[in-house]
Image (cartoon, rainbow over all chains, first blue to last red; front, top):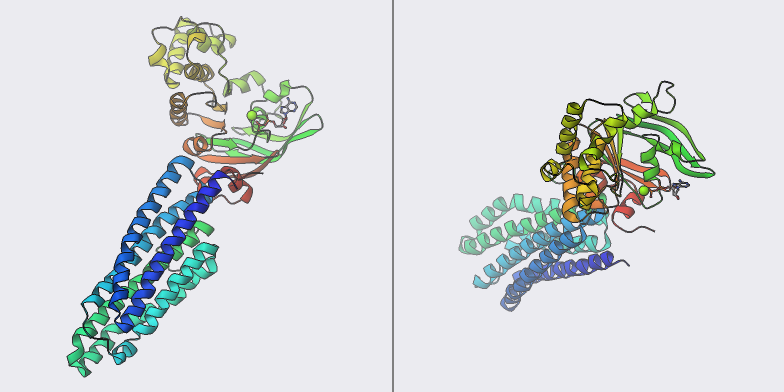
Length: 221
Length: 249
Ligand SMILES: Nc1ncnc2c1ncn2[C@@H]1O[C@H](COP(=O)(O)OP(=O)(O)O)[C@@H](O)[C@H]1O
Ligand SMILES: [Mg+2]
């Protein structure tokens, strides 16, 4: 293995750690939401500090790599992709943190019917799975798996679009629970943004492997 | 416009260029890259028939410069060709003469006698080669007293003095320090407004910086020719990618 390949391998390991951290934040947020587990919500806030430090460290590694190795072709595309993936992951971590902060303010367990009717449970499971898949796609350089993200995201969009109506219907029937219903609405909005981040990451993976720019094209819908 | 069509070159039995077809648009810079021995210099030399001087060389195929076949056109005058197609080498090779006489050399060889014309042309060429400011007060000094980077620009001025259309450069900056190198690169950027330039370089970053098109040669073949951006961001051939990313062999 050349020196350059060793550096690239080391960088990949760091990005994989970033993926793991963010994925664990999301998975914990999902669990904490269902059980209103505040200890778990706290853990997410703690992990957030590590995620931020990891983001900075990966940024620095990329800067060094650009300055010292003058990468071209696939190596250049890879570094550009990693820079963007890194910031997408950091934002995903922020979203998980936002969900956790909400949970820390909540007093009562969420009404099961509310979770069911809005389909947030399925939505959250899929979002966590998308992060898992996109992490695998990155590790295995698997563009087919990366492309599966676009299909999975369709469901998140649909739940998000239906949310206004499902929440309104729920509040009409259960006016006493309107606060937690609005809480769930904002969480649905956040999970929808997790899907967007996963899609951005998928685009970057496809860009660096296939040299195709999917951004702002309709193809991936 | 420079065009080669199915160009083959043999050094005796050795097949050094294999069926090279490519074209270089006017007023553009084409970088020739590839591992040592792949035929870059040989190809460059076919463009002004410098290989004709090497015993045992056989060439078939066509090279067209501005539409004229430089090998098959009966009226082709080699001296005129070499005047139109100037060449700069890796190692600066100034003559042991004054700075002025180095630049004037080509004109004198071509029979120019008008001293005021020669003076004008020398000044113009030195300006084009971005050397005038540094030497205008010492034109009578020996060229050998100049620094390596200055000598290389002097050789460029010497090539420009006879007003070529095409400039061939074989690793013109590989023996120079970074500052002289960047001067040569700036110069190439300026010169392409008036000239068609082909440059051989082993420095990938240099190829990326100075050229509009990049041709990758390997074992006497042209593997890929494309816009430089395409070659360095998204090469089509795996061999090209392996070479430019340093994963060769
Ligand atoms: N004068 C020559 N006689 C015989 N073989 C030569 C001569 N010049 C070059 N070659 C051979 O032709 C091949 C291409 O050489 P060259 O054009 O100098 O490659 P490059 O410039 O890409 O390093 C090499 O294998 C080299 O050994
Ligand atoms: Mg050579």
